Length: 245
Image (tube, rainbow, N blue to C red; front, side, top):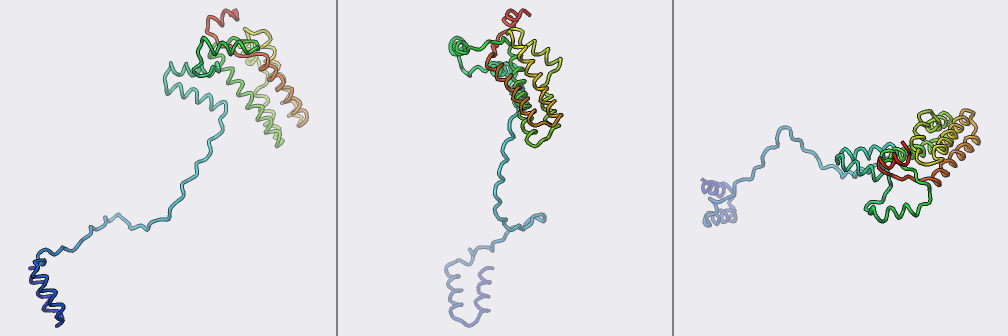
């Protein structure tokens, strides 16, 4: 059938000898029966749409991570415990509470560091020590909030931040419990909270100089306490023996 088609092409073409010669040559070589069928392309699905290639789009720039706060640090610690189980969570909390360097041997480096520190030890059980560290971080946040609010004269915000670290009966009870094994610790802790109340009082008067003076006085209680005392993380029997609880 293909041979007839080529013959028809040769007969129906013009009288050009070149065309006829090409047709005869193709038949002689036997290529007529091997001619390649026309290439067909599958039709695109009805739902497919022809889309012009779009210009390259720049990758989005990731936003910087939010600054860590005491609340997020505590949440990360609890998340670590939930992910890795009770034993590892307890170990992580012990590590965070004591501040002990990772991998420090109990019988060498850590006691040696404690001997070099001349400050008065405050005996605390691990959970107590971690809770105290969280409180210290919250105190720093409150002082930062006081400074920031004062810079824009947001007096309500200054007062609110100061009140968050002010004196209360529940705060006094906690300070006495924490300082049961270290003479003078509770008094200095309560001094800090009472001085914080003077920041709130100055804010209510909208007195910038008085707020700054009260803040500096409050921070002096902080630095005095940290220069005088250090945490000493102990087990429950040792804590009971040293605090007479």
